[in-house]
Amino acid sequence: MDKGINRISSQELSKLTGFTASQIRQDLNNFGGFGQQGYGYNVEELHGELGKILGLDTIYKAVIAGAGNLGQAIANYKGFEDAGFKVLSLFDKNPKLIGLRIRDIEIRDVDNMVEFIKENDIDIGIITSPRESAQELADTFVKAGVKGIWNFAPTDLEVPDHIVVENVRLNESLFILSYFLKEKHDE
Amino acid sequence: MDKGINRISSQELSKLTGFTASQIRQDLNNFGGFGQQGYGYNVEELHGELGKILGLDTIYKAVIAGAGNLGQAIANYKGFEDAGFKVLSLFDKNPKLIGLRIRDIEIRDVDNMVEFIKENDIDIGIITSPRESAQELADTFVKAGVKGIWNFAPTDLEVPDHIVVENVRLNESLFILSYFLKEKHDE
DNA sequence: TAGATTGTTAATCGATTAACAATC
DNA sequence: TAGATTGTTAATCGATTAACAATC
Image 1 (cartoon, rainbow over the protein chains, first blue to last red):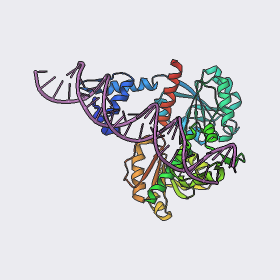
Image 2 (cartoon, rainbow over the protein chains, first blue to last red):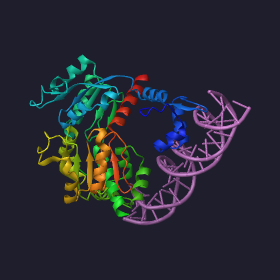
Image 3 (cartoon, rainbow over the protein chains, first blue to last red):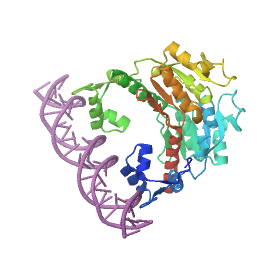
Image 4 (cartoon, rainbow over the protein chains, first blue to last red):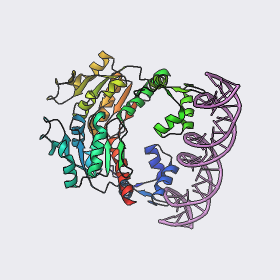
């Protein structure tokens, strides 16, 4: 779309993505018939439909628990808003951080987090704390009523079924890197 | 292992992980017979073998390109060293950052990066820059002779076949969170 | 020896690919 | 109308699961 292309076939998508044309047609068709025989797919329409499938048209309100480097990095991350998430506050227990601002987002005392979440109808809790406090923060988020958790701590959170958890497993990513480095080296 | 358990069966591993006992035996067996009939698996031995498979026993030297919040967060990340990676330096083009230290790791001028990599036999380049400069940094890493790249920028890098690239796709992780939030909500 | 549990083969299942009729 | 390309069914492939003989 950025390149000004407004029509694309499953075969061209195949070249771009590495998936077979057959699979692209099969998969897209599971969500609806976005293409047109003899023509292909309209790029702008397809982009819009994919956005709708992923729910990028909905705006969610989020807070970050853990205002260290990682929490601050995420508060600064632009791609976050592109996906429809808006960070309203960071929370930490470190008094040196409380009161500071990242861009225009204030760091608040984690003791006030439940209250803030309830008052502002926060949908998403983001955990960027060390492993040790992650489960406790998750419990707090659930109690306060968030719908989902984006978890960066290297631990599997236990939450009720109705809460959506998405883990970013940096340690496993490193394991994969390590594995393939070794494999390549052994050839 | 942390819990002092020193023997475990595929069935117990199944309960812990959610994979079927059959698959656990099948998969482990692809890498060698680590178990013993009638006994199960020795936890410490299994842990060691998995570490060897993943290459966690090898130590790699790494540098980080991009000393913003994300770069600093990673430089501070302890799990990193557990996987056998050691960060020797950060690099940035921002004069305000150059010369600063994260823990005891110095931030250097990105113009000196190639030289540093060659002199110190760096194995891994980590990209924590914005999308715009990611490919250029990857090219520099390749030219300087790294074996692998850990990429946090939301873009697909083009590198020669002999270079291992592991991407951390934060934007896709957000898409997944968004998708399941929507799906749950629609039920 | 009896019981337990692996390693491994065979059966099943689901996902991917191929093919082609429908149709723009 | 002819050409192109989807939507969709059928064929293939590979991965998961079940079963059980081997053996600790």
